[in-house]
Image (tube, rainbow, N blue to C red; front, side, top):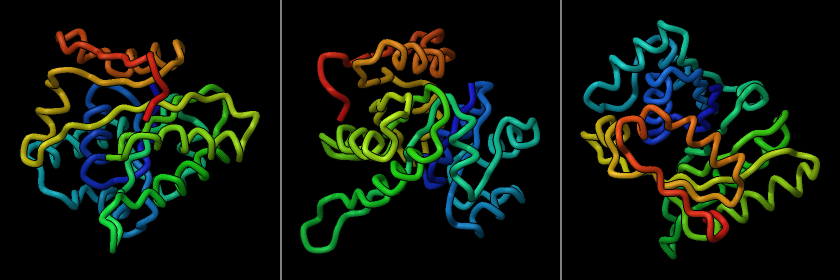
Length: 204
């Protein structure tokens, strides 16, 4: 499958590298040109055991690429992950979701064909509804489904946590999106990691 990972921070880079290691074609996107240039040179900006070798191997195999332009990556993707930062706001300590919503607006403009848009960033309940509202408002004609797929990665054990999870949590009411997410994570549930699909409510 073709995956666009928006954000190359801890969650985005680890997730993108792991999906590429599963055999998917992944493009990691970030506005920071210096960070992307460094990644293209094989310089990984964060320390995580095994990550440098995984990024290098999958980049050499052509499964993992890096870009600063979101539109091209999204237009060719089957699944688009929003993995941008959600820093605490000054004053009230709540998550600043402006980067998530900015990404949703850019993604909406670039969607082409049925695409699953997945919130991977750490976000409060209701964020998925707002992401979907933003996309529908910007592109009423867009054929997409917004899915929640929270991450449970621990620093120092992130690759193991990604590849050997207790469960894979997917929040969606769309059967087609659920099928695509199952295919994306197929190597894991073949390895006995159950997929917990939450279909009784809208994704958060």
